[in-house]
Each structure stands twice: as C-alpha cells, then as structure tokens.
Length: 343
Image (tube, rainbow, N blue to C red; front, side, top):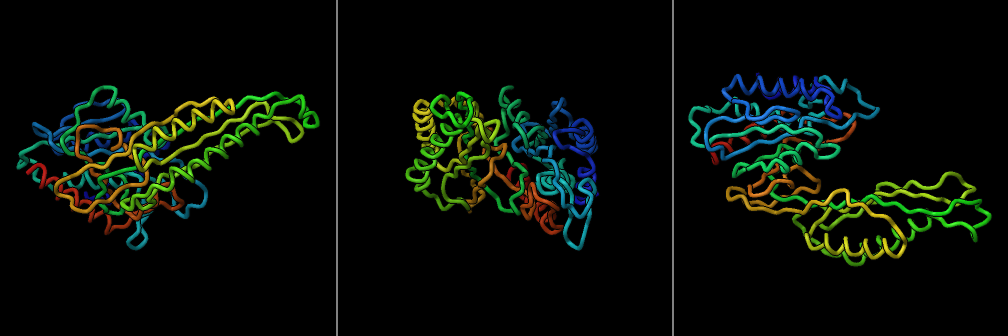
C-alpha cells in the first residue's frame, strides 16, 4: 500500500454532498486502526488518536464538489496517465488525506514522544458544518494542526477571511407601462450594488498586502435573481455577495457600509458567513505563504496552523488531478512535520 493505492480507494467513494460519508469514514477508520490508532469520535465525522499528549493533528474533509461535464475519465476511478492522476477529489482533498495516512504508515509510531490525532470532517464544500460541529463542541486542538488542502506543496500559514451576505429587496408588481404605480425591487438592488461596488473600489480594494497572490480584499456579486417577466415591474429580487478579506479591519468597514446602504435602499441583509483572516507563525517555517481560498483552518483557535497539500491546484475543475511527484513530496513533507513536532 502507498499513497497512490490509498487515493485510488478514496476516489471510489462518491462523497458528493457526503453521499458515501459512512463508507469512507469506515475505510479510513479501519486503515488507521490497523496502524494502532484508536477511535476517539465517530459519527458523521471521525477523530482518531495515537499516543498520549497529542501535539500534532492532521485534518481533512471527505466530501467533494459535484463534477461537471467534460471529463475524459471516470471521476470515481483513479486514472493514471504518465505522471498525472485523474479523479474527483484527487486534489480537493482526498490527495491530502491519502498523503497523511501514508506519512503515518511510513513513521515508526512506537518512537513518538508526542501523540497524533487525525480529523475527518464532512460538509466542507457547502456549509462547513463538520468543522463548525467541532467548534460548538469546544474541541481543544493539538498545538499544531495540518490541513491537507491543495497548495501545490507550498506550506501556507495564513488565509483570507470571508464575509458573505444574502440580500433581498421587495417591490410592487404592476405592468411595466405603469412605473408610476409600481416599485422595482430590481432597481433597488442595482442601486445598492452599484454604490457598494464604488465604495469597495475606492476604499477597500486600495489596501494591499503582497503576501497574498491576490493582494487585496476581493468583492464578488455571486447571484442576482429578480422579477417574473419582461413586462412586469419586479416585486422581489435576491442577491448574494461575498468578500475575501485581506485585513480584519475591512470586516467592520464593509458591515457598516452595507448597513448604511441597506437602510437607504430598503434591502434586507442576512450575514451568511463571517470568518476572520488569520496569519500565524510556525517556528520551523520561515517563508510566509498564504491561501486566497477559505479552509477549515480559519475556524480553529489556539493552535499553530499549516495548510499543505499536493498539486497542481485543480480543485473544482474538469479532469481534476494531481501528479505522482507531488503526492510523494507531500508525504515527505508531512513526515518532516511529524519528525519536528512529535519525535
């Protein structure tokens, strides 16, 4: 057994929206038990432990996004072409899970001075319910946590935050020839978003931090859906916007502006996601690399967090894949972390 054969087994499970969640957790549990790990918690998520005073934890989510048309291979069968391995979840993030299982297999666990935990979560791709369960339960994380998200083998110790808002405007529906009698929900939404984008471009986006690949807070209008016909004034409009937050101060600034504009244009606003950015120091990692995307690391407190997984980063893409070399490098990187923290 090696990281490729483990990944092959993991890819076979259809974990889109956690469909085969029970089966994949049973597989991981049995694999780790054969290595001497014991089960700490097993429900719709899994925690395994080895040794006492667990100082290091590895975390992965077992679910994947749905696949879209255009794959040239079976998404649920690991297919090797040269040095490339295709399959749903190979990159995000069954590849990371396979690598830390193999890293543990290649470690003489009997020589550990400090123990290790393994966490497998669910619902990362949709709502972060798995990691939120741990937070609600007051999980006390080990001193060091490795999150196996795809980073193309870069060790990342920071991550942008996320602010996301559901928006709704109400209007009065009437024939489009009688604008004097109606009230357009669409127009209110457009004015709200226009002013919000102008504020973002003039105040928020100008702050830069070159530690990030995209060195500023980003703004995206992900959804606008309003009206019932081309000849009717809209009585309802829904929207969804999100900000990938560079600086924590931006969160309060954006919230205040959205409240101001919501009052001005009668927009109902629900905060859907509110997660702060983080930038922590890990003493044995000198380079400062950061992730543009959200990970479950953002939900953890009182721990030193490392985001590290194989690549290339092809998450959510047609023909998602990783390379053989990247998997092997990731196994070695995880073994180095084990050696530094636990030996």
